[in-house]
Image (cartoon, rainbow, N blue to C red; front, side):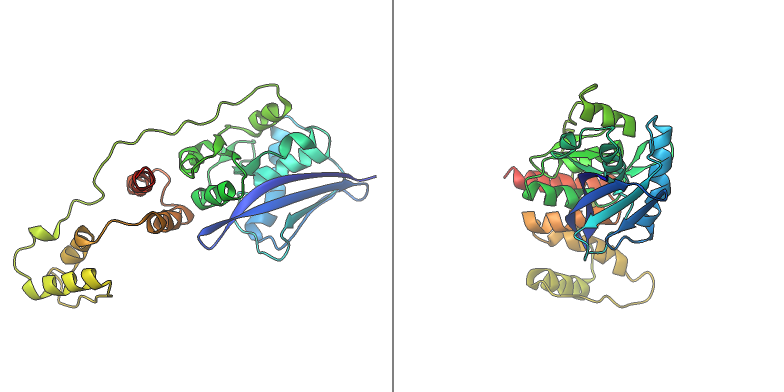
Length: 277
């Protein structure tokens, strides 16, 4: 007789997030772990990370045939953020966690071999998509906590280890939701076009491009001022709309530029100010 459990994870598709349903079936047969549902190499390699993480966190890894399906099966899955939902699904299917306790949560994190949660790229678009879908309880790594809470009306938990996740789901040790850090207002740029002396033709071209939303190509010998002018172009552009700011920040998030990056945090701060009106 097989044992079945279902958990939820997330991945990115372009600059948008996608909810992934992780289905785990444990049955009698030759011991092994197979992952289906168009996983890429990083997802396939999670088999060894999850196996070691479960054992080193003090739990039992089932010595049976384990099949994991990542739905929707027709969408390619990439990234290491599905480690945590796979591990939790295995523990639930093997009876070490109540499967029902996993349903309200979405799990997004890479696992180290010793069972610690590691941050990944793309948390903001994932969390924003989950909020839109009504999935408002998320487990992420501590490194991704502040990025996730900026997604909106969401409850974010940032445990350090897989053991902390399991104890919370069992009700033995409740985790405290992450609070949003207060960021002080700051300017996004220090370079102003008004500082430029001369360069009348180039300045006129930049002003026309900014006013009409046109592309511009600066050509000239080294030292003629191309980079200096390009850096000052944003100073005469209008403020980003909420949608534009969110798209820019999603790109930063997917590219992994928000982690420990002051400019990335400034972009998030711009979104926050726009949302607050």
